[in-house]
Length: 241
Image (cartoon, rainbow, N blue to C red; front, side, top):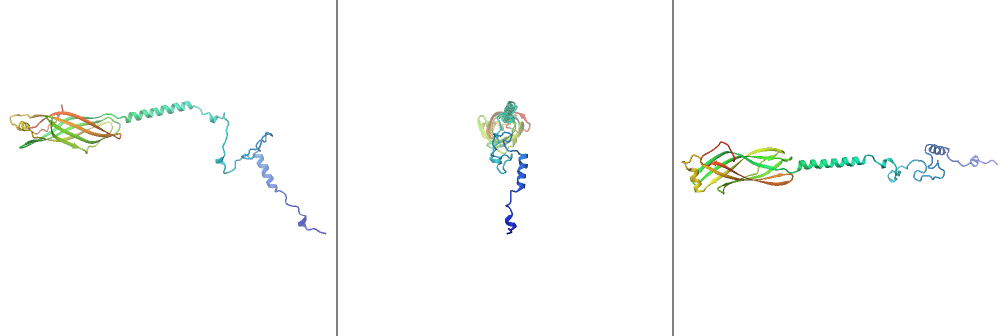
């Protein structure tokens, strides 16, 4: 009896290429602990020396305590250098941002214009002032109030609100005008008298200036005395005494 060739054919054996690939892998990556027979296979790479793809963020590498990477060099030098640098930076900030003085100084009387009326003597006095800024930041002048007094009686006031900004470490000159009205009977006769050549009148100016810099506001005050001629116009500047 002849049996079919299909029945006599033995079942298929293992693929020879698979064994070849395993041999090549073991040659390049020997099993973990192959040098020591008492060691066990690494459970992470299973002796292949490769980490499964996609598990890089789940595995932790362990290094010995005597590794050089755990002993950084020149640590003391770096710490000292950082402290000195921070200290120097703080000193520079304090030096440039520390508030300094802003001074208001009267310079001279530029002109005095006199106007006579039946019951009063009206005058327009123009003064020159200096404003010095010793800060390393600009100073904004908010407003300037000037009050004129003669014999301790208020004869005129003025308010200036459109003054400009003073740059850092600089000085700026500005002119201010104040209108005075003298209604006192005795002073009227004195200023209108023709027998007196020079009608000297002492004027007291009380100046108050509000400034703003470094996110805060300050107020400067100054009292000054000057002499003017209330009997005639004067356009010759003379210093304030």
